[in-house]
Length: 258
Image (cartoon, rainbow, N blue to C red):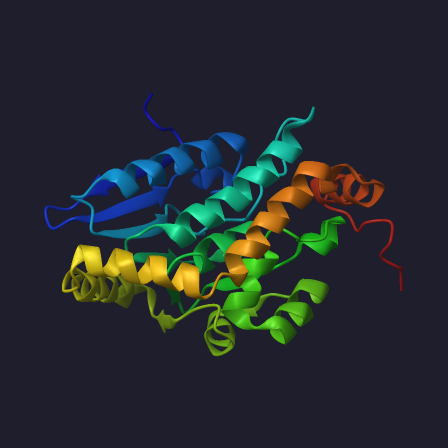
C-alpha cells in the first residue's frame, strides 16, 4: 500500500529523504502516520543501498506533535506505544540520520528529531514540550529528551511547557546546528556527504556499540513502553479537560484567572 502521510525518495548516492507530509494538520502524528513511518524505517534498515536518512517535513512546521483530532475509543494506548517505537526505531537505525526542523517542533515531534544523530534547525524554528498543559505527563519522550538536553534543562522545559527558540535549543543540546532557512539545504548536502565517507559496516557497528555500551536510553524506552501499556495518560480527568480546552481554544480549568 502506498503511504499517504509522507513522501520518500533516495538519491543515486544513497541519501534517503523521508518527508512528513500532512502540512494541513501541521504534520501532526496520528496512528496511520506512526504505522507508516515505522514500516518505512524497517524497510530502510534492510536496504543496503540507503546509506544516510534525512528526516524532513513539508510546509511551515516540522510537526505539532500528537494529533489532537484523532478518533476516540482505545486508540490512545496504541498511539503512545507506537510513538515510543518510532523513537526507538530511529535511535537504533544502523545508518546516520539527520533531522531538519523548521517552524514548530512540539512534544513527541521534538523527541522524534532528537532520536536522529544530528538535528539541523532553521533559525526561526522553536521546540517545546507542552504535554503538561493538556494534562499529560510526557513519560514517553523523557528518555530521548533527557539524553539530548540534560536532566535539569528537561525538567525546566517539560514542567513549564515554554517555547525554546532555535538558538537556545542549540545551547541546550536539543539542536546541533542552526542556520538561516536558505542555507539549510546546502548544509544537509554537505553533512550527508561527510557521512558517505564512512564505511557502511563501520558506521552500523559503531551505532550498535554505542547502544550496547551506553544502554540507559534503550532501557528507559523499554520502561516507557511498559508504562503506556498499562496507563492511558490521555484518559485521565486532567487530560480529558486539557484536550477539550485545547480544541475549544480556551484555558483549562486548572489555570487560575487573574
